[in-house]
Image (cartoon, rainbow, N blue to C red; front, side, top):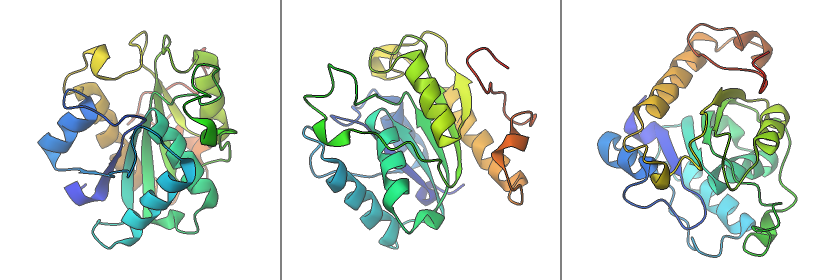
Length: 209
């Protein structure tokens, strides 16, 4: 996994210097996809920007996407429209926001309805049980719809700077495991056989079954 093979996708309002995404960018040299407008995110604009970066030739494709919050919805929306999904090998999706929540609808009107098609690449979704921007039940719907492996982060809020994760070594370990898992299972026809893979401790449902 080279620095140019990992793209950081922040959510609404971007990720500040204390956010684990920013810390990973500094520590590992990963590249952030800079959006033109972080405060008034338009889904179409964000999709186009991600597509431009992937096609620019400045990345070591196929890449691994590391998304947080609205960035997770960007991954799903982009994958449902793009003809270039082969440029992505895997995605780490952390604390997806739910644009359908009443409190978020006024600021994220272009993001509803959310894309619920299965992702065409390996993905791991890490969610918290007390995320103020997405209920645990809704996060599980995303897991099931997108076909993700799921990691339960317990009660850590929105898994952002306010969660005091600092460099979030546990999260980066999941990114490294995801990369190894993808390499070890390149010929696996279905994600269903990956749930019991020893390289990644996950749960398929919120009850651990």
